Each structure stands twice: as C-alpha cells, then as structure tokens.
Length: 541
Image (tube, rainbow, N blue to C red; front, side, top):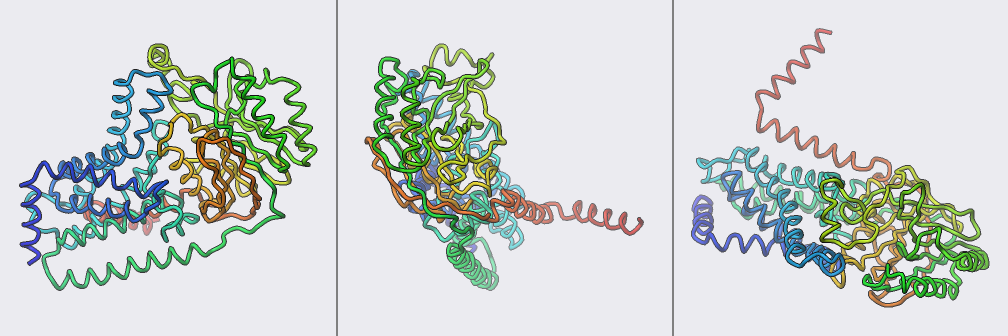
C-alpha cells in the first residue's frame, strides 16, 4: 500500500509541474503568518511540513534545491517586501531599481533553504534508483539533517556579510508557542532547530516513505511520543522563572514623537522637532524618560544649551534621568548614540552593529556611486561604537541600551548581562512605512526578553513603542503612527538564563552532535577508520 501511495504522489508531482512552484511559493508566504503581527505560530510549522514533504519526495539534490529556493522566495518576498518601501519611498531610488534590489536580496536569502534541501537529500543517500521508498536509515538521516542544516543556516545568516537574521524560523514561535519555553536555554536558533525538527518529523510521516507496514507503525508511535515530549517539556519550561525581580519597579515614559521620515532631517523643521520632544519630556513625571533613536535631528554639538539645561533640570526634579537619541561627531567620525542626562553622571552608548547600505557603505570605493546616483539616505556613513560597552547606571537601574537593528542579534545583547537589570531598545522604523516591519522587529525584542529574562522597553519614532516582560509578553503597546507617551512601571531583574551564560554554544553543540550522526550515516567507513586510528594512537601513548 505504501509503495503505491508513494508512486501515486510522485506521479502527481510530475504531472502537475506548474502547480508545484506555485504551491511552494504559497507555502513560503504562509510561514509569515507565524510572525508578528499575526503570531499564528502553527502556520510556520505547517508551511515547513509542506516543504519537507516535497523534499522527502525528491530523489535528487537538484530537485530539493529548486523546491527550497522557490519556498524561500515566497517566504522572504512576503516577509521583507518592506525593503522596497525603504529604498523607493524614503531612499529616493527609482522604483524599478528598488524592486530589483529587493528581489535580489530575497533571492540571496532563498539560497539558504535551497542549500538545506540539497544537502539533506545528498547526505541521506537518495538517488534516482531509490525513488520507490527511502530505507529506514535514509529516513532517519534526512530527519536529522533537515533541522540541523536549517538551524545552522539561520545562524550563518546572523553573521555572514555582517548578518541579516530576519525571519529566522525560531522567532515564529515567540511568545505563545510551547516551543518558546526553550528560548532561555538555547536561544532563537535552538528554537529554530526544534521547530524544524517537528516539521521534519511530520513531513517524513506524510511522505509515507517506509515500505514495511510493521516498521512504519512502530515509527509513528515513537514519533507521537517524541512530539508530545517536546511540546509538554516546552510548556513546563515556560513556567520557569529564570531571573528574579530586583528592587522596586521604576516609572518610565516612552516617547513616540511620530515624526514623518520625509521631514525628519529637514533643517527647517529641526527646531520644531526639538521643541516637541522637550514638551513631551517636561509634562512627564517618570523617573526614566526615553526618547527614540535619533530623536534629536541635529548633531549633539549643535543642541541648544537651553534645551539641554531644561531637560536636565526636569530629570533632576523627577529624581531620575532622560535618555535621548542623537548623532555625535568626534574626530571627524559620526556615531548613532544614546545619551543620558539628569541625576546620574552623563552616560553614552554608541551603536556598534551598523546596517550595511543604511548606516555604512560596504566596499565604499566600489559601491559609493549607488549613494551618489540613486539613494538619498542621511547618516549612511557612520562609525561603529565599541562592542565592550557597559550598562548605564541611571534612574536606579543598570540599563543596557541597544539601537534599532542591534536587538536582532541575541549573542550581542548578552554582552551587557547579567549586570544589566533593564534592556532598552530605541528605534526608528518609519523607514518602512505602514508595513509588517515594525511588528516583526517588536517580536524579535520579545525573543530577547525570553533569552535574557529581562524587561525590555522600546521607544520608537512611529511604533512599535512597548514594554515586554521577561516571558516575552506585551504588557503595554502604544498605537502606531500617533503622537504618544507610554507610561509604564518597569521591573528590573537580576540573574542569568542558560542562554546568557552560554550564548549560542549549547545550540552549536547540539548541531555538532547532529553533524556527527549525519556523518556516520553518510561516511561510515572513513569516520570509523579515523576514530579507530585515534583510539590506537591513544593506546600507544
């Protein structure tokens, strides 16, 4: 029966060749429903199951690579289409060039799932002669290979070419899925590994590739047991309090100025923007007042002395401090910074992880013409701050600041932990219009809260301004594209989650073990020979 089911499924795929790419595109787009603002986490798993079903029915790496690439185009095309808005509407790039650049980025990112498919089919030993059904050994190899390779490519995307880990699949489980319970232990890439493993298991099940009915029945029972164990364990882990409250909650005002990106850097409105933020700050009685990224549209050296004096006096009156976003100039270099003024000594944080093409020009001598001829982006040639910056001791808390894009990199956020009691992310997602970008960005902050066991405060220009608790839950969220002051009571925390202690090393260790398993199945003789040689050498010594 299984033999005939496999043949029937493959004959349908061959007969309707045009349906397959469309189905893969739609499956990729479906995965975006797992991310904010939808938060429908089963959608990402279901979409992956569909992709892996195609992979399990593929019998050449080329077929699997094609399926992975089309799926990736659907996923990233639906998930990061807002890059076009940034380039065309606010960057001034011609529409056709903006569309082409966005497509090229999506196509590049789609190469990662393509590589996962090709490698998984290759290491499992599937070939044209094996199309009538995988052996149990081949099924097990592919079952492990898919999640290991997928999670590793999510991790590789976080650092290759300075990193773009947007839509790493682990984020789709934050914060409501039971799988989010693993986040404080193995981080977002570990959750990617677990999420894809579940989908790989279900994909193999649906593909029905085991020929012997008895073996299939036993395998399915084991699969159900594994799925239940993962799901229940994750649910229990979500109840664990990895960190403890420290001190009393601090009153905080998160300012959202809602300054249109079209006029933000226009010299004729600079004074108006400065006055607006001054007024918003002076009506607040919060101990900690936080302005968004580059809220001050002038260099720090050009800030009016009267404005600085009034802000400092108001912060001292509130027995606290004000954090304001601005651009610093020092020795001919420019920095995207956050500066505190008030009761505590002035502290400064300078952004260290810059956005390529947005905040610095890679290969400037070769690519500088893009900015000269096509783009009109302010602050496109900034310098990096130090990676060894300490939390700010302000408003009775130790505040670890990160700016905009930096909170997508969990391994960098933990550099200021466990010393920090509060995390602050400031951003300006007005660059992406009324798209999904700001919501997705907020979900990544929710993941950071889970990984670190800390409250996260987000102050943004147009949204998403919010407070997130250590369980990744939104406690307060201001409406987008409105002038707003979000008043909250923020609890500081102490202690360290396993992720804070070990970073991505636990995740990488699990992947390394998985690679050994894959290697033993793909290259059993060479690996055993090497192992025997090492053992003999040790005995000789």
